[in-house]
Image 1: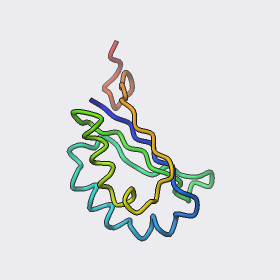
Image 2 (image 1 turned 60 degrees about the vertical axis):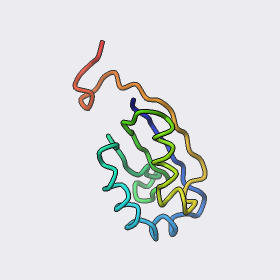
Image 3 (image 1 turned 90 degrees about the horizontal axis):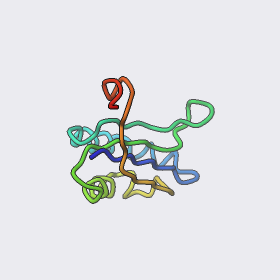
Length: 100
């Protein structure tokens, strides 16, 4: 199953995010088999990171939750709001066209 995870940064967490970046990259690299897409959400200026977006391919929402809760950003409190939902990819170049 595909799972989307949107994480909105806590106010004033830019320094904390930066201090955990190296550890986070190592964490993400070790789980690339589960990650279809991952990257920062950028603010209006296009320079400031204000959140994160993931698309996981996992067996369950519980598995996605386990991966998320072991993330260094999660453990450090970088994110103030997290939305985890099953995702249905139905069209687009990443999907390989349309599925209907």
